[in-house]
Image (cartoon, rainbow, N blue to C red; front, side, top):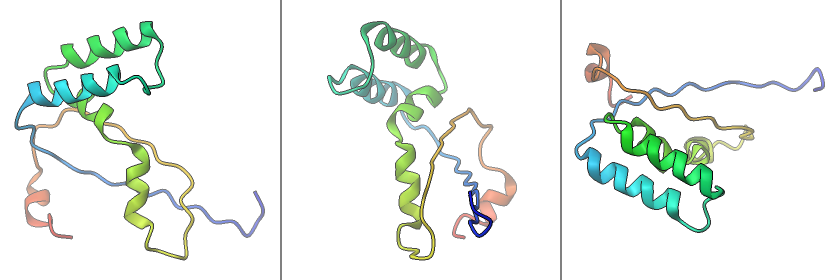
Length: 105
């Protein structure tokens, strides 16, 4: 990396309400079983078990969101070049009090 390169790490926190865990899991399982999924048979079985056993739906949602989709948030900004996207999904107790006041920002 040269001295003139500058990198910024963006942090985005999004809280979602899961309306139908079973449907979310079914959609994730369809992705896991898709022939173009980059998984061998053992990995498919392991991932399917993780999705099916997670009652929160977090594992399923992680399967359905492509980290590269996050990069589309800044595609319209010509002054930056996206380099990496990482996604984590975890259970939440719901929106924080601040989230309800600032959801349009």
